[in-house]
Amino acid sequence: MTTSGLQLLRLTSADRALVETLEASAGWPLGGSPRRLAGTLDDPSTAVFGLMPGDALGLDALAAYAVVARLPFEAELQGLLVRQASRGHGLGRRLLAVVVDQARGWGSERLLLEVRAGNAAAIDLYRGSGFREDGRRTGYYPPPEPGADREDAILMSLPLRPLG
Image (cartoon, rainbow, N blue to C red; front, side):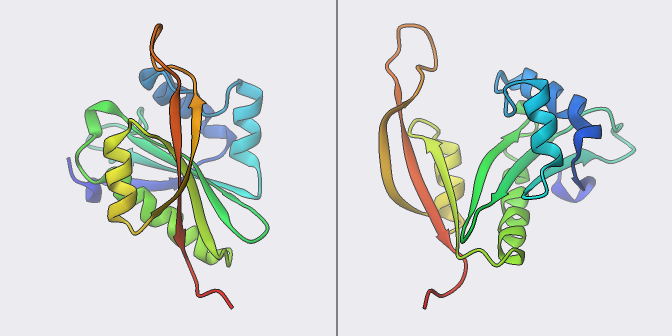
């Protein structure tokens, strides 16, 4: 699979079922509830981008999505999810570039994110894209499985324009 065979879309509440299906396959709900998800998808200060397979593969499955929110002076990557079968093909990197472009278009000074300390693939993606670690939230995430310890959140940022 190449990223060139995928169509980039700006998702809205009309695409909610596609997002819910992808989240269910990963066990990772962005919106928490259908009502909250619909609000996120239609929030004018939030952009949700998705990558869909081209017609040859069928348009019934979202391969990946990313969510970025506009804040007063910054933007925040609130989620980036790639379907398990589509990982390792540059989809996350392509979506991250779209998110960075969106944040710059908003005039944001920095792009912020937090990531589970144990998510090595995501941390490598962010570091390789110029993000730097700003700090940690100890025990921030619930345990990934019963009996495991809570997991730290790594706080990262990417400067988008010179300050001052």
